[in-house]
Length: 135
Image (tube, rainbow, N blue to C red; front, top):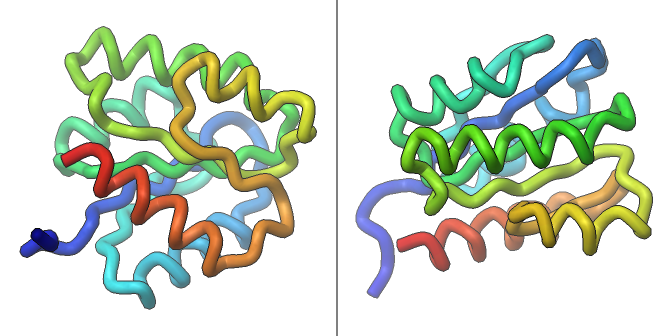
């Protein structure tokens, strides 16, 4: 049983990091794979990203983080999603993430982690996988 509608992904760029080329490249790869991508823009807060997820009815949230703030952001977004009744919306996190933090991020509730230099086809597979596990 396949999906009738494209996977809807919110690509979030939380925090003060001003580098978004990677997020845009990933967004284009997801779009080219048939997904519908909504981009939050630079400097979004976790609250803004969660609110966009509510408004847009997304299947997956993707976060691009290059600022070394991935651990507190992960905790906060998972908490906010639970607070809003969206604990079923998986979060995929990418960016500059040390390998040693991946298991901790997954303990927090991050569905998949795609560190810097993960091939785009693997990112697309990860997003597809978590979207399918949702519904």
